[in-house]
Image (cartoon, rainbow, N blue to C red; front, side, top):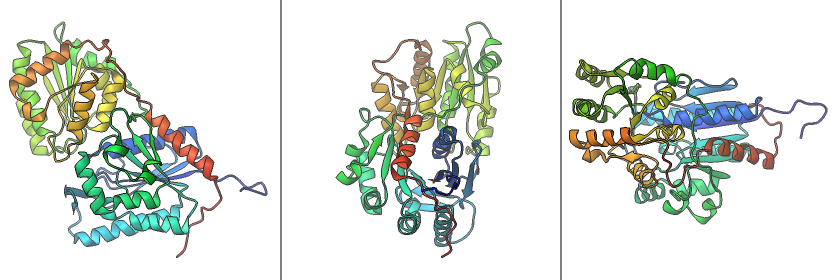
Length: 415
């Protein structure tokens, strides 16, 4: 409690976001941080993450980050360093010690762990154990996107890696950024009863950003062309594995032009290799197509488009659903089944169209694009997705603090 006129402490939120070579986790956690600071302007947020791009998304005041040495997953359970030519055991030890040190010196009121209950390779466990022992008032929260992988894969991996035990032992709350009626994560992944009681389904989480200039984008790419030109935007998040999809879209453009007047914008992502990007740029010459690495306001492109073609990654899919722009999802073929599952479940509800990546040929893709361009965005599906996940998730965090109570316990610890 705060006595003798002392100033109430700022809420301290620490976020652990292991992102490898993607942008999804970083985008989601940055959105949560911004929303919390909007509701609690005195709050401070410190994110521990390892993206090679560093602080890629604009952060709010009172939000900073600590960058870990970057690693990437080669296959389930097998990781490699991205840049440092050192023994991986040394990289892992360095990351583990950095996370623990940050946690004990920052002394968060809440630690929000994104996606991995005990971190990559279990690197988070020493920090979790130290917080439970030394900062017992800290609340530990696990945030999970709607679908992680096929249920049998997740159940086997979590059992093998000790994730179920970590969820049971350390966490006060498990936030699921999805809808139970679409995918019941607790049931599908067989969470133990004690963990299942901690689960709260928040709905789908969208970035709080707004589309700033869709009319300008539309004027630039479509309205200046022949009358009736349709704008197709193809996007794939970070883009590390986007080349096959982007090339297929580009290769089908001549066949599509025989049926529709189309302008194509491809946002290939910062992680596509320069050689692949140059190949797409070469193939686009002479076609009504432009290749962009990134854009400052991807939402404006989504809202400006007559059709969006995208992978079925979480964040891109949610931004498309919020816009009501017709979408054709071509999920990643693997190694995870996550995107195939999301595309299928969302297509069943009439929220998107989807095309299996194994079925992509010039003829099937051209027909799917033409069908998407004919789709009336005003036609509503039987039910609409719950897109209120951001405010619901932050409210859960604030409620957890209310029930716990805040104490002045933020001096760094010397061990």
